[in-house]
Length: 153
Image (cartoon, rainbow, N blue to C red; front, side, top):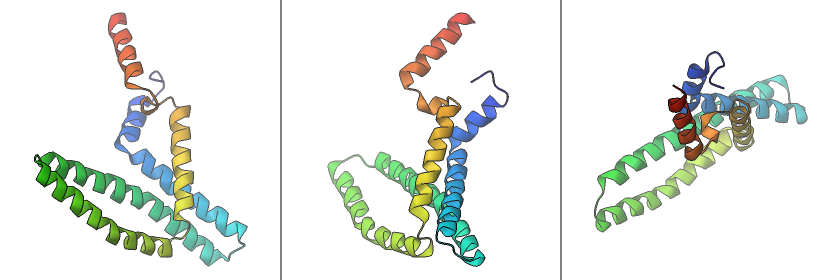
């Protein structure tokens, strides 16, 4: 895979998550189109389903996975004592209720988002398998490949 042209650029896109977001947006658009055609909706509803589903399936992972996980990791590293950890986890548990309300709004805005999300993730993981991305390899395999490259050099 490394011998292919643009390997470094493609690897960088995969590792940064940009390619995942593009795949989820494309999956959302495809699912919105598929469901609109299946239901024989008019053009305005079709365009609305494609656009809304694409936007939501792209931005939900960015905000929830990127934003929430990054914030959690930062806060978790800043806590040391059992009491601090308890406060953090308690606050996070309380935050689940309003986040459920947010997801209800998302569901109303783009009811097809979950199907689009699934299609996008399937597309992304199929792509990473097809391109033999390092994301699909274990750390042990990567270490062995690095060792073999060093010995060859």
